[in-house]
Image 1 (tube, rainbow, N blue to C red):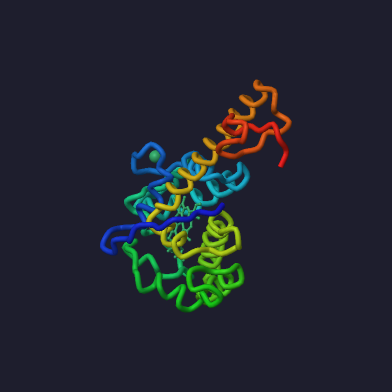
Image 2: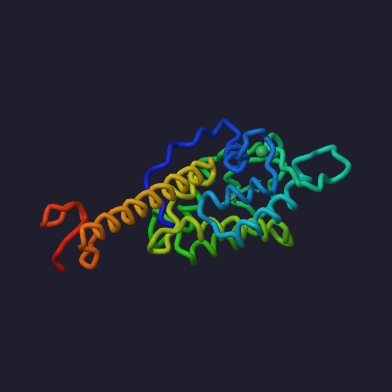
Length: 229
Ligand code: HEM
Ligand SMILES: [Ca+2]
């Protein structure tokens, strides 16, 4: 899905990683359950399969790490947002520091190093090089973590030319991308509804065959036309 427009600059002294995950805390109680992860994925337009698999893996994988000192796993796999920085893994970009803060120089480094075709984004090949470049030896868990995070981001956020834009990547770090995606989805839904309403309107006027989407047709009826063109 193409997501354009500029995102705000990110403050580097706050726990931005908490913002990254807060979108998925659907009832804002500081804890993310698997069904909330599922709902969050659905809200940004992911299919049922990806949303289910992601919810299972993310919550089962991160829950225990964010519940330090708890002896037994909670089988509802809650993720505690206040401890989300403990869920960090290796083989990442280093853009989040150990406290979950945003490190601007690391963010810039991604594009300085890998964005060769277009300084403003990464192609699929450049992204693969970047993911490989982050790998620490034998850190298999981190390899999988990094690979899936970046591949899902690419899948959901690439533009029509297959480029993962810098703005989109910046937006994922503070979670603003997720809110943006919901907005885009709502907009697309509203315009589809408008189109259906117009089609219906034209049908009532008896010109459904020649219906075209355009602001004002020659015959003066908004969105309808009696002529092919
Ligand atoms: C569509 C949904 C999501 C996408 C596209 C996504 C993508 C990403 C990306 C690209 C990173 C940066 C990794 C790096 O800097 O190398 C990241 C980091 C992280 N994400 Fe997500 N994420 C999503 C959802 C979630 C959810 C639901 C959680 C947990 C509730 C989560 C937890 C984390 C954590 C803990 C990190 C830090 C990893 C680290 O730096 O070691 N993410 N994510
Ligand atoms: Ca919650």
